[in-house]
Length: 457
Image (cartoon, rainbow, N blue to C red; front, side):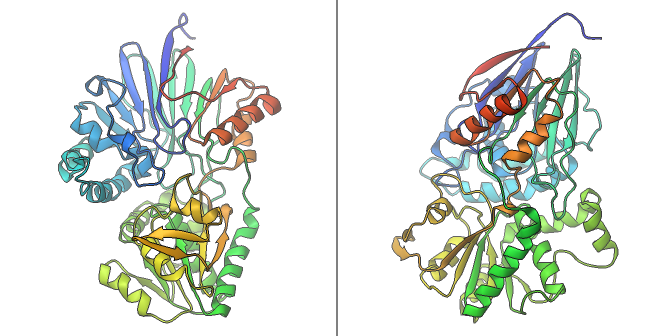
């Protein structure tokens, strides 16, 4: 039975009015917990707002809980360490292992920014300092913290190791969803059902729209590949190194081994994604039953005839000399850096080629500009004509769409006191807020950046 009412507070330090930059502060009973510490990303890998001071005393934070290893959820950790963080960092085990290559890659890129002197915190020392104290905890195991708090991780189904963070305090449950997976995934288990939540802080990337029917997405992918092959072009696929790359490899593996597409070279041109894929092999116990069955039958679900791994820069440059038709999978997913922009520079001007967008493109990114129909883009100081065919498959998004976000929260519609809608563009968050109110009668709000809200426990 709960004690007399007590109050906690949530401060929305990031992740409001934007898809990226997740950073939430939960405090009460003399304890301070952060949930995620991510980069805000729009037109660049990291906006200048990321170098501003944190809106809290970093040295007073007891624990940083991480929902998953995407950079918009972990990318400011090196700065947090530099600024005096002395607490614990806790996530699932897979998230901890994926964080190492993700953070070191970010350090490598941002540490070269001399204009803002980012090397003072984006360096290997700060990254390794964080990784040295990072604890990995299995799903559903209680995290050892005191002052009456009990914390567990539940499977969010978004990427490998992704978790919803469940806080139980004074008989009340507060859930930070992180990003919620577009279940069913080709590889991962479904998002776990929400049970008995009193307060939910939930994402809203696709709060105002739905994906294609998931049963159709492989057919669409097959059709795009075949059409490009008939034109004799290069199919260029910007993809996120973590999760989207692995899903695409799995899907193309199925098409190749089922002889559903013509044989052609398929280049996996992302050093980071190559490293991350090796970690996926370590955690096959977290895969869904279908993927595990394929592996048990002897299928390497991330490898197939025609696949060419290009970890070195020279390997990547050689792709241009290889004849088409061919497929090139490269990062980054929103075309705001990485090897993909070199391929876009080379292939977008030719109408025989195809650019396939497979996920969300944030406002201000090059990917969003292309998605919105730009006929000319600026790359490496040149105006590049966009004559290639632009295709999009939203069904490969790693996020739940609007209907499935409603379905997700419906399981606690009769128990939840309030839902805080975050991690979405304003129109998406506000649309989801209205749907939650209208369809489920839930008290839902979209907090503002920096807003502090008391909750009763």
